[in-house]
Image 1 (tube, rainbow, N blue to C red):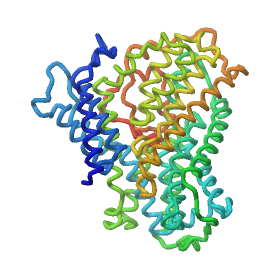
Image 2: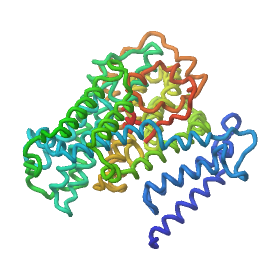
Image 3: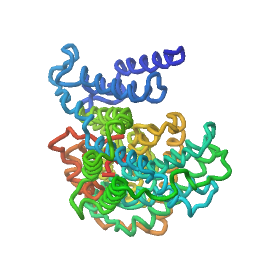
Image 4: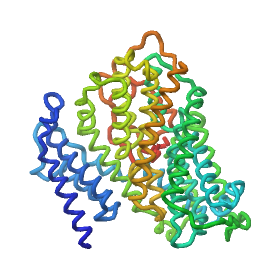
Length: 539
């Protein structure tokens, strides 16, 4: 270990240990909201993990592995005896271990199978040539084209599935860059940015949208699919332009002309195994786009189809399997475990309930709720964040309805909350598309953090401006009377189910607020789509 990494390790460790001794009672965590020893340990692990992921004294995947082991040793029903606490129910060690087999992990693995097969039979190179050709040869416009294609797909299918598909197409494009051309990072980051931003354009594009819409409808407010797109699509367009300029500024592209006549892309392979790849790829995309209400298959289940097909037909062999990015799966599993700890110990609920929302002014409420969502969405699944906060914020919003009227009322607050829940993308573990992009090796944590912070804060400000503007033209018509669902007050939001298709997540707020029978499933970082976590998961 180098001296610099040792210093980073010491700093992170000292701050994590210090978190164990903070006087939380003095910060307002008293009475029903007093933190128990397990919750305090989760805070310490959270601080340690965040700093390790940012400072990187160790590879980020090894931090995730350490988080899982540390949680089992100190928080579970199989913890070391000195760490067991009487009267406090521990986490189940099986639930923590199950993060390695989270359905989102299967979605990732299915994406790896598709990408590996596409690369092996040059499908990725040929698709890149066909889809990007209309955008010319200027790398700047090709970059914009890549973001647009990704965003459009993400409006109707899982963020994670979209990112996995587009990164398979992107592979041969990245190989066109010189070794020292920073433009490679811009192209790699364009995929998660396009996937995360694009999903906000429709109610089904990402689970936070569907969750917020369900809570609004259960409280007597309504936004149609078309109405959402009337403000969602323009928002996505502006955000895409901002992201495009930001990437060009942070990662100047030295290449003057991008020749998409890529080697190996002279024409689609017509061998039997290549045809199997084409058909399987097309079937997966169609199933992802049409959604479970049409065919009944969850996004994560769809991702397992290529795993079985390619293994049985020999499209993917043992060598191909060994070359897949297994470290990314461990990285994501650590994010799931952290989300599990935040929610099942009750820490997330206590942190939110300790905040006196009713005493805030409308502007402070809008800004405060936005930043709370943004912060949590960077460390938890976008779906999990929305599932946790929306049932609480809908109650707060309805109770403050009159005060919120100048800013667009209850609807504007909940739409802003939904958008904020999708803007967390500053770390590889923030959302599955980020993790997939990080797996390419062309992005770094620092660059991703800068991009994510700028886009997150910029997206929040833009959403507030948009909501204020819409309120001035009475775009949102609030019902004469609306009451928050009682169930939302009665119980905290459960850990979000592993990214199910957005339409499945759009349950009434009282349903969302009801504790899940099986809390083992945790949402996170994907996109990501049905983002797990994934925001299909992974949205």
